[in-house]
Length: 133
Image (cartoon, rainbow, N blue to C red; front, side):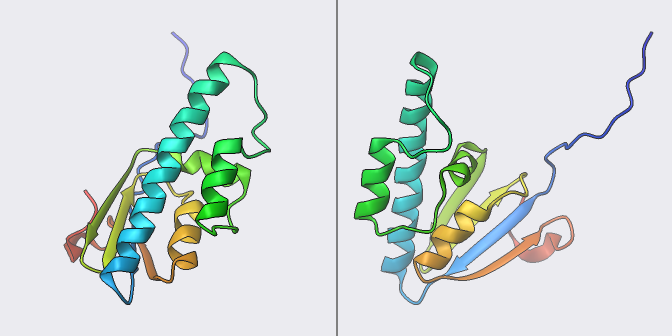
């Protein structure tokens, strides 16, 4: 029997990110953009399986989406985060994003770019907030 010792991430952050917008319409717009980026990333991932593509460049579809959305702060390397297991909920003028990942800069960029005031914390440390798992 071999025993392996090493460092590993178990992805158990229980991270909560809450974006509060001035208007509910702004929260809806940001949620729609997040959903569109997730969908485009899924399309791009399917294409990667068929053909080798570079991860350091935007796909044509992603370029078009980000351009029409006037979302200029994302980098190609940020986009993988939209494939993480993330839950996005909207209620009135607030978007809550929960995940076990800690690398959520892409989501933060979208929320800030669309005008949100953002709060980020681990629900392990603040279990009584009503967010997290």
